[in-house]
Image (tube, rainbow, N blue to C red; front, side, top):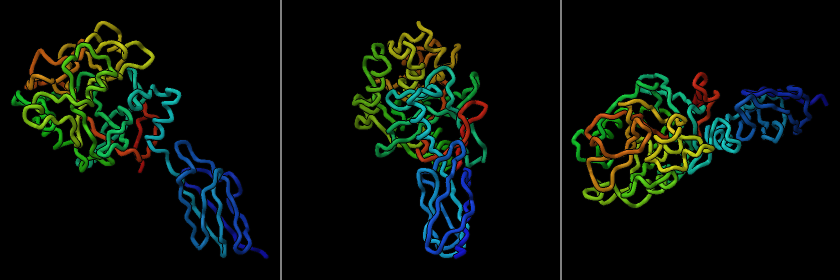
Length: 343
């Protein structure tokens, strides 16, 4: 008649009802649990010291099959980074917009994240481009780009031989892969990089760039030597021209104009990809369609260009990798409080 004592503790949350109750033999009881910020009941786990079982409810946890005194623990599950990004996109919080992927846009969105380099055990500051169905089999991944302060980006030749613009065959890819691969960065996965291009670059707006990047026109080197391949699965790439175009916030007219004329508007100053000043040209991954010595880059004026200097010229770069969508994070994503991967 005295029953058994069942006690519940919560990790990453608080038991908001009485956390210790008496329960009759083979009986059950429920506890109300309030998650801490960044955590949720759904998907959480419950463990007990004896034979009782725990079930997650909409308000907490139910402990059943009580046949002895029980000490139970609920460990609340954190929201995944994908869930956070998609949820915030519904109200454009943190300047996240659903435009051919869930993207961070504007001059300085809250998209900072620490990535652990397992070779050095250092936390490096990266920035989240967004969530895209770019996984090896079409699943969602989170593309991230290493962050450098303006004026401190490293430089590299697209191809030191000056005659290859098919990215996976370039000297740049070989160099980047030696540092940026899934063995050296936690929670990263291989992803599909799109290498389609266009023969009419100056007439395309950002959504049209997005389509041709994923289209069927190959770069010149690929059409000549690599069976016209327009995609590649690997661990490290670069941004696309469309990434740069979408970097300007959706509510501005910037993303609707032809990319060639970005310099005639205020778009570049409102774009977190833009580096400005002479000598700050940045490579994109996209090859030129008819000349193997050209690849597209972001000019210091804000234009998307391909000519001026060939692929054997040193320009700025920032590697792009892909995180698995199941990563759980804490933090707000600001530059002073970057997301930290917790699982």
